[in-house]
Image 1 (spheres, one colour):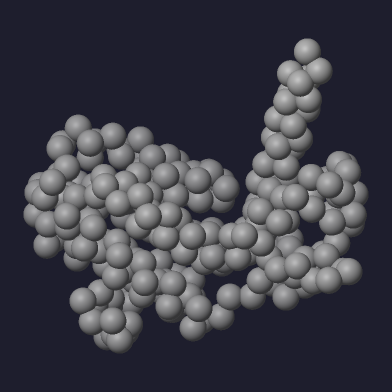
Image 2: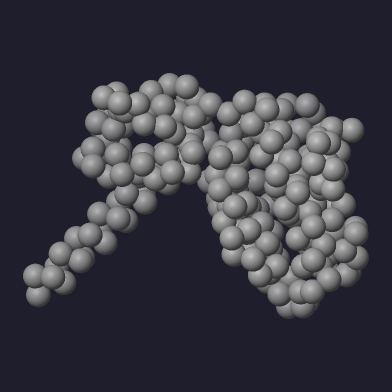
Length: 237
């Protein structure tokens, strides 16, 4: 009996850590935690109304994702992401995701692709509701489940890590400028193209989507970057 009770306590502690991590990501999205600033676990714990332990554990989870970095005897610094970082993350994603979309278009069954329709619709709904955390979660599910149809689990993990390091930044500004919805709707458009079986058109659609997202991050307006994933050195037209 003692062992079972101990396991229940561990589960409860893990859930609290996950809840705190979720709230920390929300604070990052909202801009409440500023890049370059250092925050202590006790200070954040006071804001959340919990002990410092789950906050510290949650911050270590975020550190593994590259979102924060430990500062000895002080706390955690919110990682700053440069324009060069975002360019490089987007370029790597294009090198991976564009050809995989072509592969999946040629090999996946219609039912497999239609199974991606719910998260595509959730992305749009979240954008309309200004639900940034919901947007991020549905967007993550759509892209990673799509890549998962290619059958390479390590590839999916790599893209998931790249997304964690880049996708949280700038969403509040885009939401305030009503620029999230057009990007959200591109997921359904990509799915429709894939369902036609035209792999080249699907690859072009994915490259355009990634370039559009990067342009929005940079505040460049509505003109997307032109990504040429077959040329590793080319980022802009």
